[in-house]
Amino acid sequence: MNLFEGNIVGWIGIGDYWGPIGPGNTFFRNRAMGTDRFDGFGDHHGIMVEYIHGPQYVIGNEVTGGDLYFVIGPVEHPDVDYAVEHEKVVVHGNNVKGTVIWDPVRPQTLPASYYLLAKPNFYGALDWPSTGGDMALGEGTIPALDRWQTGNYIPSPAETALTLKLKGTPANQAIRLTWAVNGDLPVTSTWRIDYEGPGSTLLPSPITGIVSPTRAYPLTGLTNYAWYNVTLSAIVDSTSVLSDTVRVMPTDRFLYLPLVMRV
Image (tube, rainbow, N blue to C red; front, side, top):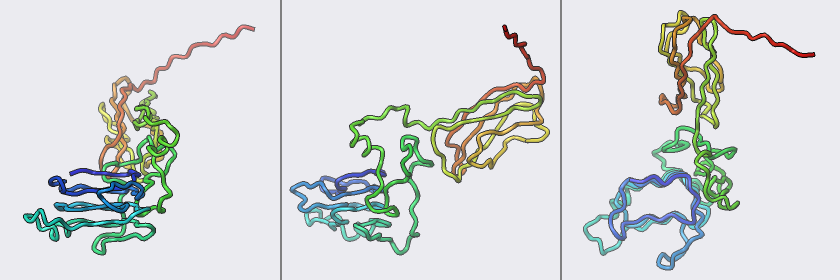
């Protein structure tokens, strides 16, 4: 079982020629340009599936050159009914040179990803997802292609990590929370605040459903001179995808230092 997602390649091929492959391989939101060719395989192909044990999944891809190409099976494997196995291949939502082919029994929609909950930071200003059967054929790009074209082949690990930084400022019976994220979260994401310490008379923990654009929140009704552990979490589809924790003590005592200016 393998997921091959979001790539731009010359061609895609899968088969049981040298033994069982999969089952459960998924090709999703890739672009096959049909530009690569091996002599033994004849003409250029976009996505080729041959001699397979099902199920296999070819979903939401772009084929800009070649075709979707299927071989049911060779006679040298008489123990496998490849006609039956061929029926187990799910082909859905692929844009083949301008024509999107949908499986009539499945919804004509595609998720953004099968493994990512949000746009990865390394995409930067690029649209995400940028390839797929529901996108303009051949127009989107991916960071790997941009790096290849500019000669910056290997990205820095620091460029790929989506991080959350939470800050808590003490106030009288309150903590003022502010935070920053070095990337984009889905517009449907929300924030959740959990805190440990004497209960708030105004805001019981956890506080949920804080809308995605929010970057500041006051915790009020707290107890002065008591420590609070406050955790902020980004929630996508009921799952925490980012979190950070601070330890803060509310107080009504603040130290002000006089400023002396020399004329």
